[in-house]
Length: 99
Image (tube, rainbow, N blue to C red; front, side):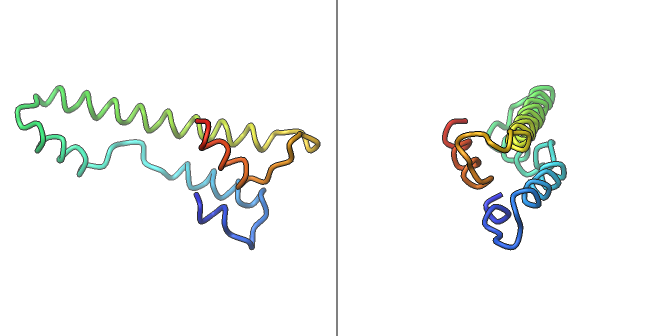
């Protein structure tokens, strides 16, 4: 995200489109290495419990992705005369502080 926001060759509309695209490409399933680490840390963990952990991680990742996309849409749909006038980078910095 920071690399996209710091790109001086793109305006906010182009950055927003790129961020939406990148977010859409993010996986919502946990990395198998994470699940392997959980198994190593808790060797007696039943498979059903590991499946439950995997499902919870998936739900969390999906939820965060959707919240971020929703909030980006809120930024994109602000009236042009909205106050304060913030760039996408400024808005993102504020959003991270308070969310």
